[in-house]
Length: 198
Image 1 (tube, rainbow, N blue to C red):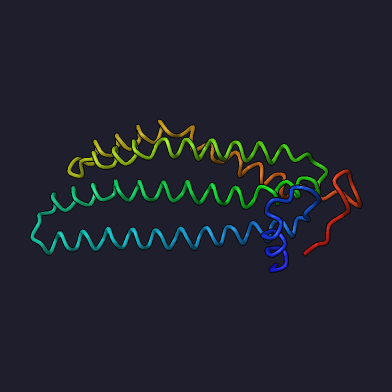
Image 2 (tube, rainbow, N blue to C red; image 1 turned 60 degrees about the vertical axis):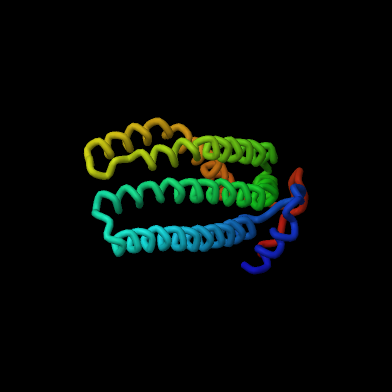
C-alpha cells in the first residue's frame, strides 16, 4: 500500500503508462483518508468555536431568541469557510488524482480523455460551488429560528434550487468508480506494459 501511495505521489504529472487496480485504489483510499481527517479537523474546530460562542452569549445573559439569532448569524460565516474549504480540497484532490486515473484508464485499454472529462465536470462543480458561497451564507443568516415551519420551507426551497449542482458533483465520482474497477487488459496494450501490482 505504501509503495502504491509513494509511486502515485512521485508521478503526479505523468499520464503515460498504466496503473493496476490495486495501485489506483490504494492511492484513492489514501486520498480519502487525508480528506476525511482534514475535513473532520476543520469541522471540529469550527463547530467548537460555534458552541463556545453560544455558551459565552448565554453566560452574558442573552435570552434564547438572541442566542439562536447570534448562532445563525455565526453559521453564515461557518458556511462560507466550509464551502471555501470544500472547494479547495476538492480541487486539490482532483489534481492529485487526475494522472493516476488516466493511467488506470490506460490499464483497462481506455483513452485518457475520460479522465479529462471527469476533471472538467469536477472543475465545473467546484466553480458552481464557489458561485453559491455568498448566496448560501446570506440565506443561512436570514433564517428565523422562532418559526420552524417557515424555516423548513425555506430550506426545502433552497435544497431544490441547488439539486442540479449537487447531482453534477456526483458524475465525476461515478466515472472514477466505474472505470476504476474496470478489469485490466491482460499483457501489454496500446498504452504500455502490464503494470506491477503494488
